[in-house]
Image (cartoon, rainbow, N blue to C red; front, top):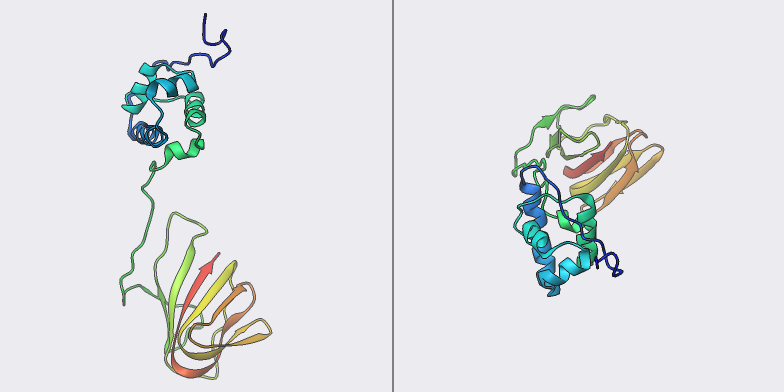
Length: 205
């Protein structure tokens, strides 16, 4: 009598597969981890999934590649989401480190002397990545550039005091204050009250 005739899961074996790689190693590690944490013997996991004990051994030794059906059965047998079997895969992601005092100075249209916009990093592979900048204002002036761009922006005051404009509204900002706004509206410093002024500006387009 087959397992299917007995009312259980039909046995599923993997056919010929390409040589295992890093993804197989990740799946192997996660299956062993979750099986060990749950205290499930390999034979019991085989029974739960409809796979043979030999196939469980191959999966846990990363010597075979799993089909989507097998991954789903493993996840059900271990009582975990399918995505948890891929934790640790594809870990190479872009990152930018900017050390204290470093970062390229960005020249923005209308920027005046004494207004420094220092980029704190960017992700080139992401079209909608955030754009953090450290803004330093050191010279008072009656005229300030106003900016408009798609997306949203977040400002966090670090030092000094100023009045910041957004559209027809004015906000007095002191250290610890923050402001989030739609960046399509004209925005920028209107009056500098206490110099020097430093604030973190994070734009998301």
